[in-house]
Structures are given as C-alpha cells and as structure tokens.
Image (cartoon, rainbow, N blue to C red; front, side, top):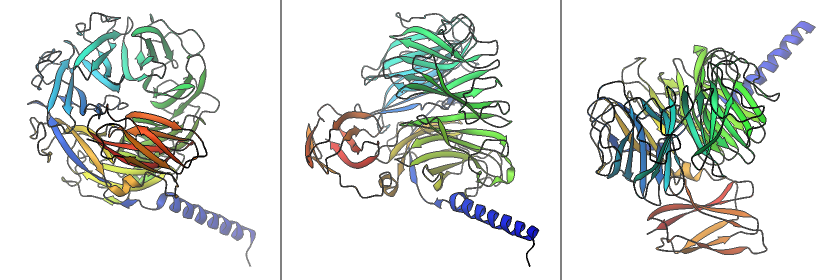
Length: 600
C-alpha cells in the first residue's frame, strides 16, 4: 500500500525524471563533432618585434572588410611596431610615436583579395596612444575607421570640425577612399575631459553615431529625459554627427560608470550594447533583469531615433563581471557573445549551462535579443572545467549562428582534444560551434587549433561558404602559397585568413522544406549584364546580389502577380570579376532560393 508520503516522493521522482529527460533531449545531447570548415591563412603581417595588436578593442566591430567590387581586402589594427611595411603613397610613412616606448598608433593595410599583394599601407597617429575599435563601410567607395587617442598631434585634415585634442582622451575618426587610396577626412570628437570609444554606426538617414563613454561635462547634450550631464565616474555616450558636424551628445547611465560598445539600428529605434557599474542605471518594466547583479553588468538599451524615449533597458549578469566580446545583427535579432565570471546560480540563465559545469562559475556568455519583441530569447553560458570565452559570432543562415570559442580545457561540449602542453593553463584552444537558434543548442563543434594562438576572430559576413578571420599568431603556420608574408617575422604577427565551410553546411543555410521557387541566371558566367529567370512566382520576393563579403551590390523586389515565370534584368557590367551569390527572400525575410553568379 502506498501512503501519501510515498506517493508524493514517487510523483516528485517522476517529475524530476521527466525534467531530466526533457533537459537531456534539449540540452544534454552532445553536438556532432564534425569538420565544420578549414582555415586557410592568406598572409602574416608584422614587424621584427611583438607589437601587433589585431584585437578588435571592445570586440564589437570587425577589423577586416572585403570589397568584392574592387577585389580588395582591408585590414587594420593598432601597433607599436616601427618597421611595418608602408606603401610609397602612405599617409604617414614612419611610425609617429617613440619606438619601443608607450605610444601606439593605427596601421591600415589594403591587400588584393587573395592577399598576394600589399596595395596600400600606412601608419596613422600621433606621439601618444592611438587606438581603433571600429572599421565600417561609409559608402561604396569609402570606409570609416574610428577610435580613441591621447595624441595632441593627430594628423587631422584641414577641414576637420575639431582639430585639437580637447581632453585627456578624445574620440577620433577618419574616412578613407579605397579607390584613390587616400584619407579624405580625419577629425577629433570630444569634450574638455575624457572619452573612451566603443563602436560606430552609419544610420539609414546618413547620421554617424560614435559610442563609448564620456567624463566631459561641456558637451552639447540632447535635452529630454534620456540624456543628462555626465557624472564624475563616466556615462555611456552617443555622439550624433551629420555631415561631420556634431549635432549633440546623448549621455546615459546611473551614478557610477556606464559605457556603450556597440550600436545597431532597427526600423524605429537604435539599440546599444555595453556595460554598467551603476546599480541605478535606468531599466524598463519589461526588462529581462531589472536589478543590478554585481560588479560589471552587460546592458542592452533601446532608444527611439530622436533619443527622447527609453524603449527598453535591461541588465544581464550575476555578482561578478560580464562583458560583451562581440555583437552581430541579423535582421531584428542581436547575437551577443562574451564572458561571465559569475556563479551559475547567480547569472540569469534562461537554460542550464552548456558543457561541463563542474567549475560552478565562469563561462563563455551568449545572449540572443529580439529587438522587435524586446525579448531575451536565450541567455546562456558555455562552460568547461577551466574557462571558456565566446570570441565572435556570425549569422550563418536562417536558423544557425557560427560562434568562435576559446577554452583552456581539453574537453568542451564533449569534444576532446589534447593540448600541446598537457594541462598548461596558459594554452588556449580555439573552437567553432554551429549554434541552432531554433532549438537553442549547439548542433556541431570542431576544434581548430591546439597552439597558443592569442586571438581568433570571425571578422565578416558569411557569403558563399567563406568567412574571413584575423588574429594574432605566435607560431609559424602554414600560409597559402603566394601570400604577401609567409614567414613569422617576430614573436607574434597578425594574420589574415579565411574559413571555408564544407558544402553541406553552406547548403544547410536554406530551409529543408521544399520550395517551388527556382532561379536561373543566363549567361553564367557573364561578361556584362545578364538576365535571371525566376520560376515559381507569384508572391512578393526580394532578390539580392551579394559578394563574398556579404555586401549587397544589387537589390530588387518582384511584386505579386499572376505570372509564374519572370525574366528579371541582372546588371553586372559595373562589377569586378569574381563570384557572387543571388539570393531570393520571401516576405518573412527567409532565404528561399539561391544561385551562384560568375562575372568574367
């Protein structure tokens, strides 16, 4: 006979078993250990010493841009190396600081797409410390690089809106024309105290947003309920510029230190990701985490485009430090990767930790935020017996994200690899993880490297099965034949490479459900304009022609009609030789068909 107590125990046991079964089904099933892709190092780049720093500063913006129309690869980092290669038409041909001293400057290089030729290279900076943390496209012919400086002698252009250093540190930005290989604009931006830089955004209406932190109380602050005069500890800041003229600054935060490192744009708002040390940073009622958890919290803030209304604001973190290492946007979704030092029972997990949770604290942080619903879809940690960090993330289709992880353990996500130095805690291992955003779990994992690589970043948009990578290498790798620099020059050198995904992964980016839509470009290859035959219409679809860097070179909507077959002109005459991808999207933004297009 079963008494009430026994029945209760049995019920609890059954419920716990069901919970375990569900957890194992959703999270406990080990991901497939497969070869996701292969890295091909295109070139090394460095001087005779060890001063290259190809880290992305805050990690929020890639340092590598690819221009398929001009067959160029643009790469930048900060350095204190005085013997890096420069081109005859360099903006600054010599290192502007004191060789071997505490100064640092920017180094910008333009390569041919295969990195066999260095087409342009220059130093950029003054006698102090100059760093860059953003490199973005400004328009079809220009890039914009921005950062922070302590140099009073930065080589600004004659038309700079601010031509002097106003505080201890100021922001700076430069516009570089990749066709003419010259800087068209360089200027300081800042107040009478100090600024730190995070990232930048060129908005749809042509404004430039520079984000970071400020201590300056003499800025032209935007009036309203969002912005205020910065406190003595420093506030998060957004500098809003139009035609290179500062319109106003938006200072946001609580009574302690706050900062922004990334900016994104939606249809009706701007989203900022950063960090906060303020217990009283404003949060909204629908926040995922309203209360401050510990030392340094990850924060996500959404504000209307006129910077007058706070639409969403939340903390994410436990009692230790959390920081964002990378942020990438895919339509209305933000993917945020980084690190958390908090105990698992303190961090606001939406799911159990992924991996070996025996350590009990610290892991690679990964957050998925839906900007339309103001919802945190996933807040999780990748954990191992030593440490793990999410270094970069790249959307890889409709339902997957490619993550790069670093770990000091020889086993993460059930994937075992022996470190070269046994259990040496200084050794970091690189991993690729295909994360399924529908099932919210890792689908496939792969170790990439077992040496002491200092950094590894996915630095662009996945296109045609290729994504570019960059970082620091401290051991001689195998470099593609014909690369500009094939031998390690110093103790550490920067490197540029590309990750080639296997065909099965590239094809897997399209939905598995059968689609009626097909596309047939002809002629293909083409020397000038072509025509694409689109079958399976009607229904509104969006055609986009992308380069291998993910840049959109042509776009057109096909409106609903009774036609089942449409001949659509495909302008190719202005494009450089190379391989492109034509993708069709449905009204929900899902890729429903694709075709390779080759321009001869």
